[in-house]
Length: 418
Image 1 (cartoon, helix red, strand yellow):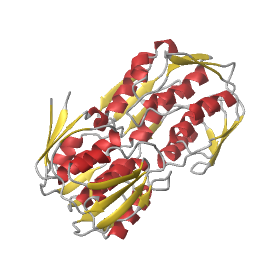
Image 2 (image 1 turned 90 degrees about the horizontal axis):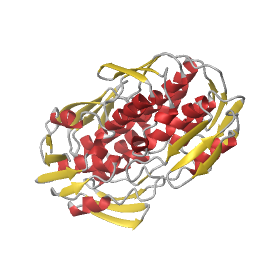
Image 3 (image 1 turned 60 degrees about the horizontal axis):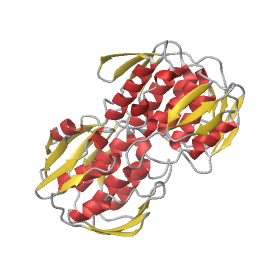
Image 4 (image 1 turned 180 degrees about the horizontal axis):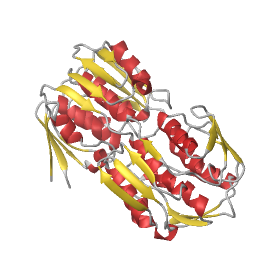
């Protein structure tokens, strides 16, 4: 298994380009199943989650051409749900998105419980309730779920709590269901907005895009076409935290600052010096940043996926910061690794930690428990005195494209080794 070896305390400077959004790319690739012709997707990040999804789609019978980096051409002419690769599907949570298009085409689907990293293994009750409301019968056995129906029907679906993947999955099912579907308490993330706009541009009838109430009038046909993946705001936010934590002069390019208003405001309150452009953010060296409390929240609030990188930043800031994780249970346990490196973090309860800074960090041997904690450990390694080794980097490469090369280009001493 590969690992990263990082020599910390090196001066960083230069440009960090942001890749296409993982959380849009996987959804658009799945959405291509709704059309019968070729869908062209560009600016796709070459990450592990995309590679696994392409494997799943290929085995389903989707004809996929990958003529150049970041460009995928998908034609689902002969796909068959019986060819679903159970082993691959069970490895990552985004696979549940397949259910919408598959149920739009077939009356019976066997589907395993979707997996992922530790954070990814979450209940899918809201998904199941939504499909049941659309006329689907759901049976569960030891190994998988069995979905059967006689035609998807529009329904009024209320999410008890905001769910990004739930909103996307049921949206993909509703666009070809008969009648009208309303999603109440729908997620409003930029990736969902971009997905819905793509579908509308090719024949879907979705209103309320970007609001908590989405209305979908089912249609018979979704046309194929071309779509460009928007910048990954989570990667951009991670790079902002990296620049400020390492006191570096970096320019974060190919991003959308409009999607980063909350983290930008937080950094400015801390005293960070930022220059905002239309598609980039320049971060200037700034010593003695002031700690800030923050709480994760659904968009447009502070994204839970940026919480870990910003927690590392707080270890280098002056004062105490109370960090409240409101979205996922157990997402703060990685802070034990930071404490092993020298951080001063007290876990108040499973949802809150108190960080006191600044503290010197020291290189250790670590293991990435999940995607976002993994990038936090990389940032910590760049800060630390000495050598940091990070195992289980597959979890990191699920969501960050060419990370080693990008970091080397700004002066980091990082290697990927077996």
